[in-house]
Image 1: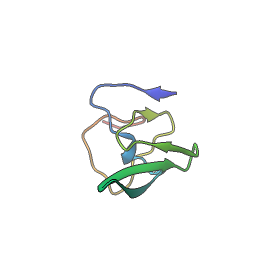
Image 2: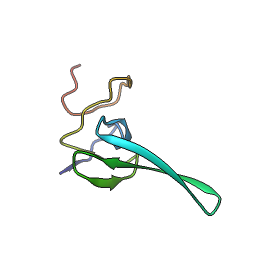
Image 3: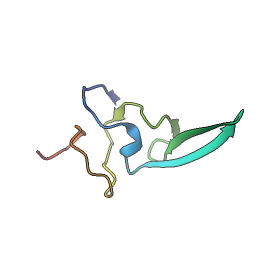
Length: 68
C-alpha cells in the first residue's frame, strides 16, 4: 500500500532504495530498486508502509513513524 500525503518524503529517502543510473539517448536517468519489495521505483514515488528514513537524511517532511 502506498501513502499519498502532502509534504511527505519521496521514496528515494528510504533505506531500502538502492540507486542506479544509466544513459539513455544522451540523458542520465536515475532510478532505484526497492530491496524490501524487489521492485523498480522512481526516486520521487509515494512511500510504502515499510519506509524507513536513511540515517544520513535530515528532513522536516512527513514520513511513517516520524517522531515530532
